[in-house]
Length: 218
Image (cartoon, rainbow, N blue to C red; front, side):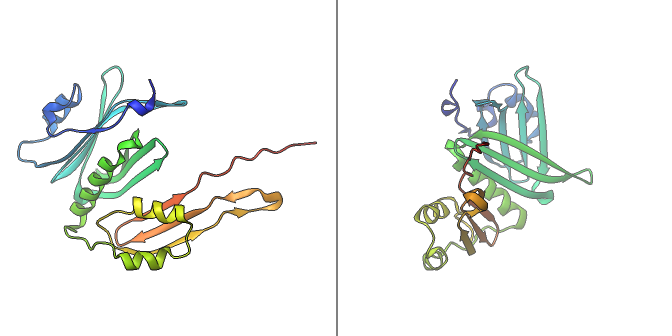
């Protein structure tokens, strides 16, 4: 089955989820918690990669990630917003990954879900809520259009457009830098063209795919 048919989707309540996600979250999420985001991502394959079906559940108190194997076995990671260390979203073409680092039992741990990135806005909004809950930043300053123009001036059009598209909407852009590819002898590419954005709450890296080059030996 093609990965483009396997999109993540939002649910309004836990009862809308299929088994075993419904049973797992019903046992763990109390009625006193306010459900903010509930995202189901089905299993899908891309090349030699196969992701697990997953659910990201975000409440006013914490987040939970549930992963389901084909045999029905589930793995659950959960953490309060206060003990969440880092939230990382990676998007590469149709592939997306959400990774969260957190503290549990005095140890640093991490949990990750993979998904088709066509519906990545669902995860971006959930991440924004988690960041808001971590630092109480409920009304973050919006980006200034004039400030964007000054920072993006001279950048390639493609990177200006991608920066505006992927920059978190509720954060203030502080600075940014864009650099061309770096090449070694015989024109071999060492580092692709890329850009880095720094906001008051995020670091965003946008990079071209490194060119695959063949080497002929005489």
